[in-house]
Image 1: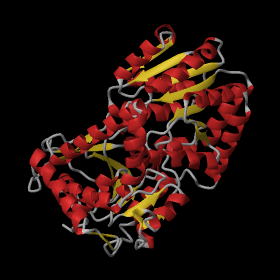
Image 2: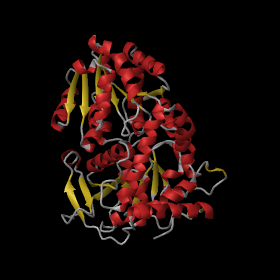
Image 3: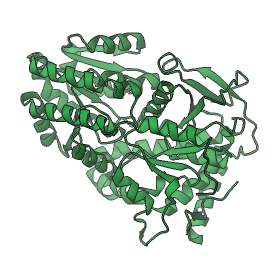
Image 4: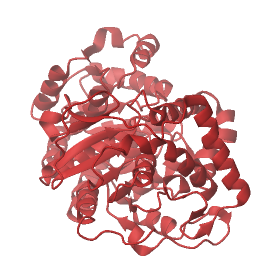
Length: 494
């Protein structure tokens, strides 16, 4: 196993930082055990939510024997983790594109193998990150002094990547019995790092954010970025050792692709934008989609928006889609904060067939009132937003992974400094607003969408233009690059 923590793209890590990385790995071994010699069985199972629609099958590890009929010609692994909803959503985009291009996507969530050290390590870090996200929304002091600096500069440093690479060595055993010639698209850096530590031959690392950070580096993989701005930042490893000039990434280790978007959304852009404009022109209720992030943050902001829109809902000028994901406690909190929801809201809870039927009917039918969606199944919780997007007029979201989706967007206040660059990118390409950093500015923008057709018209026009220049083709390109590595592999350690 190559030690990827000592030198990163030709840049030596200090002995002190390396010792700290090794100590961090040993801490996890002491807490969760070392299963590096384990020979975990692998099997393929049907994905109940995405299987029929996108052809997805799940790779299950350490859960007994079963079918292992991997398609070595058409198969591609989408490696991910459940950490919030964003990495799952990007993974769905990759699976959708793979399916549309005639390939067979295999879903591999490294945070779902509860008997392995891999999942225990990821779970511990996920718990900390989710806690930090929620605290950042409750405490301005914590957000200013801890959370923003950590997400903006702390994760940016090469020393952080050195520590992550050491921890990723503990994740490699889950790949032991998976065919090494299957391409892997990692939608979080840990699956990409773990795949390389395990000897997978063709690895693509799909970077999710628009702010270059060493956190997202996985040397040995082909790195993909969604924006030109982040391409240059990653190419020279800008700011990843403070002001020190670093050796750059090799050109074949980094590719710009455009946004990672589901095939179903890209294919229907013109149709869906035309429907939005027709609803506006005909005075139909404007459909606002509010989606709670995977950490359950920002429910107070959502409550303020919902309260503001309730009169417009009653006047049939607005309709609300509210997806609380798998967070029942968020729904209960919203009910307490906005009592009108108890009488106005139609609930679509844990009934996937009902949710799919609603989303399909809403494409051409009428929608009024408030509709709340909750699914305990994580795939349903995430994919629900994607299905609702097509019939929604405006998406209200923090500028995370959803910042890149082809729907008119109202950007809420970020959760972590790195996210602000998603809003900047969206505003520059015309499919989103500027980041609304407080409640008054958020409500002002909601009012403008309601009362003025200019915002919707301009954004829909920009989305159609963006499609014509391939801005939303990132998922297709990611799959093509991953499959292309089998013909033209990297021949050196990047």
